[in-house]
Length: 368
Image (cartoon, one colour):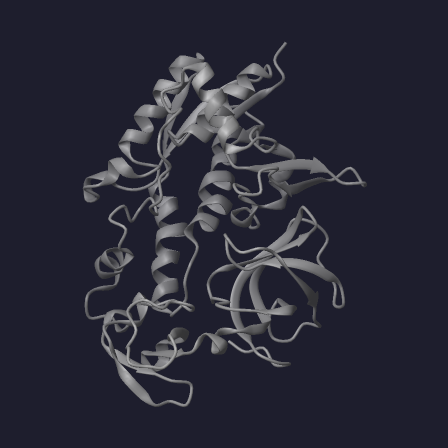
């Protein structure tokens, strides 16, 4: 008997391919789906992206190998609204977005679940390195993947919590080498396929190309403005603040005794504030657009927070709400706390929730 019917998001990469294969082995009635997220005719290098035509073709070959049906869903309109437009708007406002979080919370899971239900499917799966478990109260919860080097829960904090009972992450207990080995055993065409490093809708690797198309070359975010220090002294000129993010070192004026870093981006006067590394450290973080996958945390509660994908989680204390949805005091100051990036809250391996970093500060006061 079938273990149930599940729809698998197949990008044409090795991870989603093995996820589908494992579910077939476990007795599920598997349906493979690849999402067409943008117009490929406008993207000459689309073949290198996870969502390009090559990815669709590889996903179909894997589905044929596994003996499962495969469909392509055109989600371009929703993806453009929820992911691309948000990406452009954030850069225009001087922040650094994380489009993978937006894609996961909207297109890849919420919208996919809606389509799955139309097909009579009540479960969806992907090749993310994460785990679903149940807590002591019997409620589903999201846990880090066993492979710390590949854990992807940083990108999953914004999942609609009501979806947790319907999610499957077959790779959660595996390492990347184990996944590739399994793909080779199964003779999957994706076994040794390189991972895509680009943002899928920016395959050239230069997001300013997209911003220029969407905003226009004369937009303030792409127009010249001053480099200034924290005291307001002008140190040079840049060609658009959208090309800079907090913590960046490349592309800054030289001639200083110490290396300089981007400390802040100020759209109001098109200024990029720069300073030494010591000026980057922050110990207060304000977070908006918060989404909880468990009971919301309370003031005084001790948690761990991850502020970058590759950064380790650090200890923090929840502060009384100020003018943000969540305010955290970091027990150890962190460099390059970047507005627009994600602050993901953990208790051990469990993802409690997260939100977008609105601002950070040194000392008792948090400001944008």
